Length: 206
Image 1 (cartoon, rainbow, N blue to C red):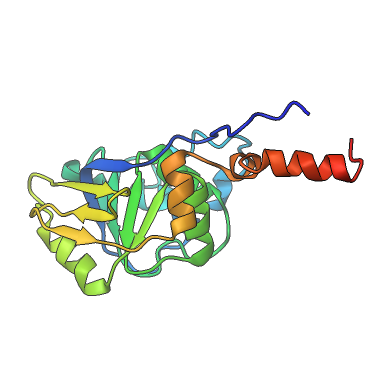
Image 2: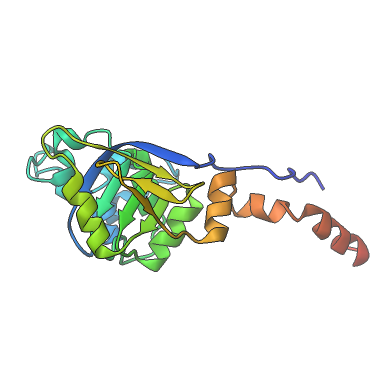
């Protein structure tokens, strides 16, 4: 049948470690993450320059210094600490694409829009929910003068805070499996290729 056995389609995610940024704004919706005028692109890549576009840039295309992610100490961040209900709003998968293309590999927040969280997991982006007081404590531990580092260990399900604390987190096991192994929907299906082939043979499916 020419199927690709157990083929991974996305890069495995086991450990995310690097600069951490803080976006302490509740109800950040997907239209703010990637505005609708940029949804005409047909590729999954190239959305990074447009992430948070209306917040990042002024009418002349210059960076707004008051926008949190334009702070130099957050430059190159791989982890984002966000407020509650991050990724709410429309179901556009482009939001996860834009954040990944921007360079983020993990979002930590008290809660997420359900569809965004699903899209993130399917695109190699960690969406980790922690109690609101814990997220606030993590934000307070970030050095706003020089920047801070954070590590997210998906294998151990532990986050290492800037102050050195280890913070355990829960994570959906099926999503964790696909992320650790770099599996998209097609690759997950192909893990059952033998059963599919047996069914097709038994029912005369060419």
